[in-house]
Length: 153
Image (cartoon, rainbow, N blue to C red; front, side, top):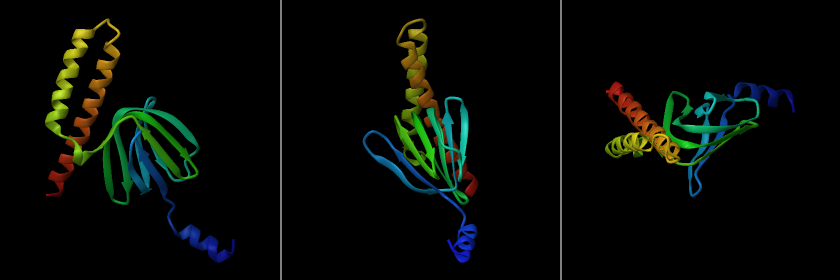
């Protein structure tokens, strides 16, 4: 590498290459400055030059930030792998904030709450609790998107 190449590399900000997929489709394939993801052990932020990582994700909000803009996703769980400024998210389910039907998500939340009460102390309880976490994540992402839109005017 010549001195000019090294100087150019230093001047250009590093970015992550991010791929977000489900079992049947690619949802995002592009660059990002940071990824914020809901890992089982707590929220994680991935920046350039992050150490290699493989982590399980729980239902929640996945944020892809590029410059001053953010794209929000409601993720239903999955895995994230980070290696050499490459981030791969394999999601069980994922929706862009703008695709979320708030009325449907609210109905799903109410249904899951009812199932949790009905299935307490039964094997079905875990599935109902997971459904509740997914519906809450969808609502959180949708409300955040709506709040952002109202602040922009």
